[in-house]
Length: 379
Image 1 (cartoon, rainbow, N blue to C red):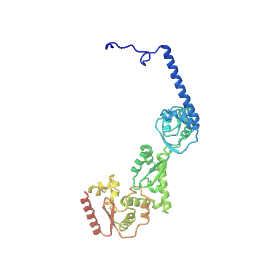
Image 2: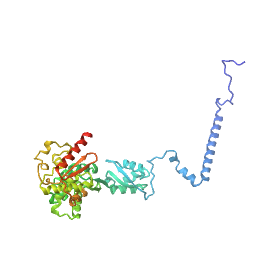
Image 3: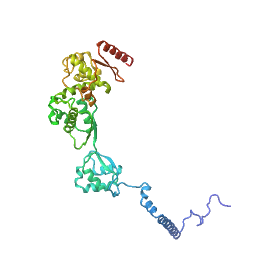
Image 4: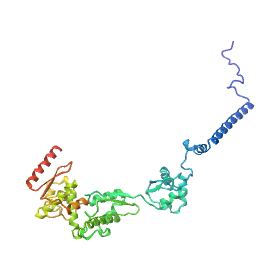
Protein backbone atom coordinates (compact mmCIF):
# COMPACT_ATOMS: atom_id res chain seq x y z
CA UNK A 1 0.00 0.00 0.00
CA UNK A 2 1.35 3.39 -1.04
CA UNK A 3 2.07 5.90 1.68
CA UNK A 4 -0.26 8.82 1.08
CA UNK A 5 2.40 11.21 2.30
CA UNK A 6 5.28 9.90 0.20
CA UNK A 7 5.35 10.50 -3.59
CA UNK A 8 6.54 7.56 -5.66
CA UNK A 9 9.83 7.97 -7.56
CA UNK A 10 9.44 9.35 -11.15
CA UNK A 11 10.89 7.35 -13.94
CA UNK A 12 12.88 8.94 -16.77
CA UNK A 13 9.94 8.17 -19.05
CA UNK A 14 7.92 10.80 -17.18
CA UNK A 15 8.01 13.96 -19.35
CA UNK A 16 8.29 16.12 -16.24
CA UNK A 17 11.41 14.29 -15.17
CA UNK A 18 14.61 16.21 -16.15
CA UNK A 19 16.49 14.53 -18.95
CA UNK A 20 20.20 14.04 -18.68
CA UNK A 21 22.44 16.50 -20.51
CA UNK A 22 23.09 14.21 -23.41
CA UNK A 23 19.34 13.68 -23.83
CA UNK A 24 18.65 17.42 -23.87
CA UNK A 25 21.24 17.96 -26.62
CA UNK A 26 19.57 15.28 -28.68
CA UNK A 27 16.18 16.95 -28.21
CA UNK A 28 17.55 20.30 -29.44
CA UNK A 29 19.03 18.59 -32.51
CA UNK A 30 15.68 16.98 -33.27
CA UNK A 31 13.88 20.36 -32.97
CA UNK A 32 16.41 22.02 -35.31
CA UNK A 33 15.97 19.22 -37.81
CA UNK A 34 12.19 19.66 -37.71
CA UNK A 35 12.51 23.43 -38.34
CA UNK A 36 14.92 22.77 -41.16
CA UNK A 37 12.56 20.28 -42.78
CA UNK A 38 9.67 22.80 -42.42
CA UNK A 39 11.75 25.51 -44.10
CA UNK A 40 12.67 23.15 -46.94
CA UNK A 41 9.00 22.32 -47.43
CA UNK A 42 8.15 26.05 -47.57
CA UNK A 43 10.92 26.77 -50.08
CA UNK A 44 9.87 23.86 -52.26
CA UNK A 45 6.28 25.11 -52.18
CA UNK A 46 7.41 28.58 -53.21
CA UNK A 47 9.45 27.19 -56.08
CA UNK A 48 6.53 25.10 -57.26
CA UNK A 49 4.18 28.10 -57.44
CA UNK A 50 6.84 30.06 -59.33
CA UNK A 51 5.99 33.74 -59.75
CA UNK A 52 3.18 33.57 -57.26
CA UNK A 53 5.57 32.27 -54.68
CA UNK A 54 7.94 35.12 -55.34
CA UNK A 55 5.13 37.63 -55.00
CA UNK A 56 4.11 36.16 -51.68
CA UNK A 57 7.72 36.14 -50.48
CA UNK A 58 8.46 39.69 -51.58
CA UNK A 59 5.23 41.03 -50.04
CA UNK A 60 5.34 39.00 -46.88
CA UNK A 61 5.92 42.05 -44.67
CA UNK A 62 3.02 43.83 -46.25
CA UNK A 63 0.70 40.85 -45.86
CA UNK A 64 1.64 40.63 -42.19
CA UNK A 65 1.10 44.36 -41.67
CA UNK A 66 4.81 45.03 -41.19
CA UNK A 67 5.35 47.51 -44.04
CA UNK A 68 7.45 50.44 -42.84
CA UNK A 69 7.12 53.77 -44.70
CA UNK A 70 10.59 54.71 -43.50
CA UNK A 71 12.21 51.98 -45.59
CA UNK A 72 13.94 53.45 -48.64
CA UNK A 73 11.56 52.12 -51.25
CA UNK A 74 11.01 54.18 -54.40
CA UNK A 75 8.60 54.10 -57.33
CA UNK A 76 10.13 53.66 -60.80
CA UNK A 77 7.82 56.33 -62.25
CA UNK A 78 6.90 58.21 -64.28
CA UNK A 79 3.73 58.69 -62.18
CA UNK A 80 0.01 58.19 -62.53
CA UNK A 81 -3.11 60.23 -61.90
CA UNK A 82 -2.98 63.72 -60.44
CA UNK A 83 -3.50 64.06 -56.70
CA UNK A 84 -3.57 67.26 -54.66
CA UNK A 85 -1.33 67.33 -51.59
CA UNK A 86 -1.41 69.97 -48.87
CA UNK A 87 2.06 70.99 -47.65
CA UNK A 88 1.64 72.54 -44.19
CA UNK A 89 3.22 75.84 -43.13
CA UNK A 90 6.73 75.28 -41.78
CA UNK A 91 6.83 71.63 -42.92
CA UNK A 92 10.19 69.87 -42.78
CA UNK A 93 11.32 67.44 -45.44
CA UNK A 94 10.15 64.56 -43.25
CA UNK A 95 6.70 66.09 -42.78
CA UNK A 96 6.42 66.65 -46.53
CA UNK A 97 7.45 63.05 -47.11
CA UNK A 98 4.80 61.82 -44.69
CA UNK A 99 2.07 63.81 -46.46
CA UNK A 100 3.21 62.56 -49.86
CA UNK A 101 3.45 58.96 -48.62
CA UNK A 102 -0.10 59.09 -47.23
CA UNK A 103 -1.33 60.44 -50.57
CA UNK A 104 0.38 57.63 -52.49
CA UNK A 105 2.81 59.97 -54.25
CA UNK A 106 6.06 58.46 -52.95
CA UNK A 107 6.83 54.88 -51.95
CA UNK A 108 8.54 55.78 -48.68
CA UNK A 109 9.31 58.76 -46.47
CA UNK A 110 13.04 58.00 -46.38
CA UNK A 111 13.34 57.95 -50.17
CA UNK A 112 11.72 61.38 -50.29
CA UNK A 113 13.86 62.87 -47.52
CA UNK A 114 17.00 61.57 -49.23
CA UNK A 115 15.94 63.25 -52.49
CA UNK A 116 14.86 66.36 -50.57
CA UNK A 117 18.28 66.72 -48.94
CA UNK A 118 20.03 66.11 -52.26
CA UNK A 119 18.19 68.96 -54.01
CA UNK A 120 19.60 72.37 -52.99
CA UNK A 121 16.43 74.11 -54.23
CA UNK A 122 14.18 72.18 -51.86
CA UNK A 123 14.36 75.06 -49.37
CA UNK A 124 12.20 77.09 -51.78
CA UNK A 125 9.20 74.75 -51.50
CA UNK A 126 6.18 76.75 -50.35
CA UNK A 127 3.25 75.64 -48.21
CA UNK A 128 -0.09 75.16 -49.93
CA UNK A 129 -1.90 72.70 -52.15
CA UNK A 130 0.42 71.20 -54.76
CA UNK A 131 -0.65 69.23 -57.83
CA UNK A 132 1.32 65.96 -57.72
CA UNK A 133 1.13 62.54 -59.39
CA UNK A 134 0.53 59.18 -57.81
CA UNK A 135 3.55 56.80 -57.58
CA UNK A 136 6.28 59.26 -58.53
CA UNK A 137 9.99 58.68 -58.07
CA UNK A 138 11.03 60.63 -54.96
CA UNK A 139 13.49 62.75 -56.93
CA UNK A 140 10.74 63.79 -59.37
CA UNK A 141 8.39 64.59 -56.50
CA UNK A 142 10.93 66.98 -54.99
CA UNK A 143 11.55 68.60 -58.38
CA UNK A 144 7.81 69.15 -58.90
CA UNK A 145 7.41 70.67 -55.44
CA UNK A 146 10.32 73.00 -56.14
CA UNK A 147 8.41 74.37 -59.16
CA UNK A 148 5.72 75.51 -56.68
CA UNK A 149 2.92 74.93 -59.17
CA UNK A 150 0.04 75.42 -56.79
CA UNK A 151 -3.47 74.22 -57.46
CA UNK A 152 -5.69 77.07 -58.64
CA UNK A 153 -8.05 78.54 -56.09
CA UNK A 154 -11.62 79.31 -57.11
CA UNK A 155 -12.89 82.67 -55.84
CA UNK A 156 -16.55 83.36 -56.60
CA UNK A 157 -18.02 86.82 -56.05
CA UNK A 158 -21.84 86.73 -55.91
CA UNK A 159 -23.88 89.38 -57.69
CA UNK A 160 -24.92 92.21 -55.43
CA UNK A 161 -21.86 92.11 -53.14
CA UNK A 162 -20.39 95.39 -51.94
CA UNK A 163 -16.68 96.16 -51.96
CA UNK A 164 -16.46 95.34 -48.25
CA UNK A 165 -18.12 91.96 -48.78
CA UNK A 166 -15.89 91.20 -51.77
CA UNK A 167 -12.72 91.99 -49.82
CA UNK A 168 -13.88 89.89 -46.87
CA UNK A 169 -14.52 86.87 -49.11
CA UNK A 170 -11.25 87.34 -51.02
CA UNK A 171 -9.28 87.40 -47.77
CA UNK A 172 -11.01 84.24 -46.53
CA UNK A 173 -10.46 82.28 -49.75
CA UNK A 174 -7.00 83.46 -50.82
CA UNK A 175 -5.39 84.11 -47.48
CA UNK A 176 -4.11 87.45 -48.75
CA UNK A 177 -3.88 90.07 -45.97
CA UNK A 178 -6.85 92.43 -45.61
CA UNK A 179 -4.31 95.24 -45.18
CA UNK A 180 -3.13 94.68 -48.76
CA UNK A 181 -6.64 95.26 -50.10
CA UNK A 182 -7.17 98.29 -47.90
CA UNK A 183 -3.91 99.84 -49.09
CA UNK A 184 -4.73 99.12 -52.74
CA UNK A 185 -8.24 100.60 -52.51
CA UNK A 186 -6.73 103.88 -51.34
CA UNK A 187 -4.80 104.03 -54.63
CA UNK A 188 -7.34 102.99 -57.29
CA UNK A 189 -4.96 103.92 -60.10
CA UNK A 190 -2.79 100.94 -59.13
CA UNK A 191 -5.50 98.50 -60.27
CA UNK A 192 -6.76 100.48 -63.25
CA UNK A 193 -10.01 101.97 -61.93
CA UNK A 194 -11.27 104.14 -64.82
CA UNK A 195 -11.73 107.88 -64.35
CA UNK A 196 -15.49 107.50 -64.85
CA UNK A 197 -15.63 105.91 -61.38
CA UNK A 198 -14.49 109.13 -59.73
CA UNK A 199 -12.17 107.22 -57.42
CA UNK A 200 -14.97 105.08 -55.95
CA UNK A 201 -14.46 101.34 -56.53
CA UNK A 202 -18.03 100.35 -55.57
CA UNK A 203 -19.80 98.62 -58.45
CA UNK A 204 -16.62 98.15 -60.49
CA UNK A 205 -15.50 94.79 -59.09
CA UNK A 206 -16.99 92.23 -61.44
CA UNK A 207 -19.22 89.55 -59.90
CA UNK A 208 -18.01 86.20 -61.16
CA UNK A 209 -15.54 83.35 -60.61
CA UNK A 210 -11.77 83.79 -60.65
CA UNK A 211 -9.09 81.10 -60.89
CA UNK A 212 -6.16 82.23 -58.77
CA UNK A 213 -2.69 80.97 -57.97
CA UNK A 214 -2.04 81.78 -54.30
CA UNK A 215 1.71 81.93 -54.81
CA UNK A 216 1.44 84.52 -57.58
CA UNK A 217 -1.71 86.61 -57.17
CA UNK A 218 -1.73 89.77 -55.07
CA UNK A 219 -4.47 92.08 -53.83
CA UNK A 220 -3.64 94.58 -56.56
CA UNK A 221 -3.60 91.84 -59.18
CA UNK A 222 -6.98 90.49 -58.10
CA UNK A 223 -8.60 93.94 -58.05
CA UNK A 224 -7.13 94.59 -61.48
CA UNK A 225 -8.76 91.42 -62.85
CA UNK A 226 -12.13 92.43 -61.42
CA UNK A 227 -12.05 95.95 -62.86
CA UNK A 228 -10.83 94.66 -66.22
CA UNK A 229 -13.72 92.20 -66.46
CA UNK A 230 -16.21 94.96 -65.68
CA UNK A 231 -14.77 97.13 -68.43
CA UNK A 232 -14.80 94.21 -70.85
CA UNK A 233 -18.47 93.54 -70.10
CA UNK A 234 -19.40 97.19 -70.64
CA UNK A 235 -17.45 97.41 -73.89
CA UNK A 236 -18.93 94.15 -75.15
CA UNK A 237 -22.39 95.66 -74.72
CA UNK A 238 -21.32 98.76 -76.69
CA UNK A 239 -22.05 101.09 -73.78
CA UNK A 240 -20.42 104.51 -74.33
CA UNK A 241 -17.69 105.23 -71.78
CA UNK A 242 -19.50 108.34 -70.55
CA UNK A 243 -22.48 106.20 -69.52
CA UNK A 244 -20.59 103.53 -67.63
CA UNK A 245 -21.07 104.98 -64.15
CA UNK A 246 -24.79 105.66 -64.60
CA UNK A 247 -25.41 102.18 -66.02
CA UNK A 248 -23.58 100.54 -63.14
CA UNK A 249 -25.43 102.71 -60.61
CA UNK A 250 -28.85 101.82 -62.03
CA UNK A 251 -27.89 98.17 -62.40
CA UNK A 252 -26.73 98.01 -58.77
CA UNK A 253 -30.11 99.34 -57.63
CA UNK A 254 -31.88 96.76 -59.77
CA UNK A 255 -29.58 94.02 -58.44
CA UNK A 256 -30.29 94.78 -54.80
CA UNK A 257 -34.04 95.32 -55.30
CA UNK A 258 -34.88 92.38 -57.58
CA UNK A 259 -34.67 88.81 -56.35
CA UNK A 260 -35.93 87.13 -59.52
CA UNK A 261 -34.45 87.63 -62.98
CA UNK A 262 -37.87 88.24 -64.57
CA UNK A 263 -38.53 91.14 -62.18
CA UNK A 264 -35.34 93.04 -62.91
CA UNK A 265 -36.31 94.51 -66.32
CA UNK A 266 -39.58 95.73 -64.74
CA UNK A 267 -37.73 97.38 -61.85
CA UNK A 268 -35.39 99.00 -64.36
CA UNK A 269 -38.40 100.38 -66.23
CA UNK A 270 -40.00 101.72 -63.02
CA UNK A 271 -36.73 103.48 -62.13
CA UNK A 272 -36.59 105.10 -65.59
CA UNK A 273 -40.23 106.19 -65.33
CA UNK A 274 -39.59 107.84 -61.98
CA UNK A 275 -36.45 109.58 -63.19
CA UNK A 276 -38.26 110.88 -66.27
CA UNK A 277 -41.08 112.30 -64.11
CA UNK A 278 -38.66 113.85 -61.60
CA UNK A 279 -39.92 111.64 -58.77
CA UNK A 280 -37.81 110.55 -55.83
CA UNK A 281 -36.75 106.91 -56.22
CA UNK A 282 -37.51 105.81 -52.64
CA UNK A 283 -35.25 102.77 -52.87
CA UNK A 284 -34.59 101.22 -49.47
CA UNK A 285 -31.46 99.39 -50.64
CA UNK A 286 -29.78 102.71 -51.44
CA UNK A 287 -30.72 104.23 -48.09
CA UNK A 288 -29.44 101.14 -46.29
CA UNK A 289 -26.14 101.28 -48.17
CA UNK A 290 -25.56 104.87 -47.14
CA UNK A 291 -26.60 104.11 -43.56
CA UNK A 292 -24.31 101.10 -43.39
CA UNK A 293 -27.00 98.67 -42.26
CA UNK A 294 -29.29 95.97 -43.72
CA UNK A 295 -32.47 97.18 -45.40
CA UNK A 296 -34.58 95.22 -42.91
CA UNK A 297 -33.19 97.38 -40.09
CA UNK A 298 -34.06 100.80 -41.53
CA UNK A 299 -35.95 103.17 -39.22
CA UNK A 300 -38.06 106.26 -39.85
CA UNK A 301 -35.08 108.29 -38.74
CA UNK A 302 -32.95 106.63 -41.43
CA UNK A 303 -35.52 107.42 -44.11
CA UNK A 304 -35.65 111.03 -43.01
CA UNK A 305 -31.89 111.55 -42.73
CA UNK A 306 -31.01 114.07 -45.42
CA UNK A 307 -27.31 113.89 -44.54
CA UNK A 308 -27.16 110.45 -46.14
CA UNK A 309 -26.33 111.18 -49.80
CA UNK A 310 -27.75 107.76 -50.73
CA UNK A 311 -31.12 108.55 -49.16
CA UNK A 312 -33.41 108.35 -52.19
CA UNK A 313 -36.33 109.43 -50.01
CA UNK A 314 -34.71 112.82 -49.47
CA UNK A 315 -32.73 113.35 -52.68
CA UNK A 316 -34.04 113.20 -56.23
CA UNK A 317 -32.21 111.46 -59.05
CA UNK A 318 -29.70 108.65 -58.81
CA UNK A 319 -27.50 108.16 -55.74
CA UNK A 320 -23.85 109.31 -55.98
CA UNK A 321 -22.72 105.96 -57.38
CA UNK A 322 -23.31 102.20 -57.40
CA UNK A 323 -24.29 100.48 -54.16
CA UNK A 324 -22.97 97.01 -55.12
CA UNK A 325 -21.49 94.99 -57.97
CA UNK A 326 -24.30 94.19 -60.42
CA UNK A 327 -24.46 91.04 -62.48
CA UNK A 328 -24.91 91.01 -66.23
CA UNK A 329 -28.62 90.23 -65.87
CA UNK A 330 -29.11 93.50 -64.00
CA UNK A 331 -26.99 95.41 -66.53
CA UNK A 332 -29.01 93.94 -69.39
CA UNK A 333 -32.22 94.92 -67.56
CA UNK A 334 -31.07 98.53 -67.48
CA UNK A 335 -30.15 98.45 -71.15
CA UNK A 336 -33.37 96.67 -72.16
CA UNK A 337 -36.11 97.42 -69.62
CA UNK A 338 -39.54 95.84 -70.07
CA UNK A 339 -42.02 98.27 -71.67
CA UNK A 340 -44.60 99.51 -69.15
CA UNK A 341 -45.86 102.43 -67.08
CA UNK A 342 -44.96 101.08 -63.64
CA UNK A 343 -43.68 103.52 -61.06
CA UNK A 344 -43.97 101.40 -57.95
CA UNK A 345 -42.88 97.93 -56.89
CA UNK A 346 -42.96 96.10 -53.61
CA UNK A 347 -42.08 92.61 -52.39
CA UNK A 348 -45.22 91.15 -50.83
CA UNK A 349 -43.73 87.82 -49.70
CA UNK A 350 -40.33 87.98 -48.05
CA UNK A 351 -39.86 84.21 -48.25
CA UNK A 352 -40.44 83.77 -51.97
CA UNK A 353 -39.46 87.27 -53.07
CA UNK A 354 -42.75 87.74 -54.92
CA UNK A 355 -42.80 91.31 -56.19
CA UNK A 356 -45.80 93.25 -57.49
CA UNK A 357 -45.77 96.33 -59.73
CA UNK A 358 -48.27 99.13 -60.02
CA UNK A 359 -48.83 102.25 -62.07
CA UNK A 360 -50.79 104.16 -59.43
CA UNK A 361 -50.09 105.00 -55.83
CA UNK A 362 -53.50 103.65 -54.79
CA UNK A 363 -52.64 100.22 -56.16
CA UNK A 364 -49.26 100.44 -54.48
CA UNK A 365 -50.94 101.10 -51.12
CA UNK A 366 -53.02 97.97 -51.57
CA UNK A 367 -49.87 95.96 -52.16
CA UNK A 368 -48.30 97.53 -49.07
CA UNK A 369 -51.23 96.21 -47.04
CA UNK A 370 -50.69 92.78 -48.60
CA UNK A 371 -47.11 92.85 -47.33
CA UNK A 372 -48.25 93.89 -43.83
CA UNK A 373 -50.75 91.07 -43.79
CA UNK A 374 -48.03 88.61 -44.78
CA UNK A 375 -45.75 89.94 -42.03
CA UNK A 376 -48.55 89.61 -39.44
CA UNK A 377 -49.20 86.03 -40.50
CA UNK A 378 -45.50 85.10 -40.54
CA UNK A 379 -44.27 87.26 -37.70
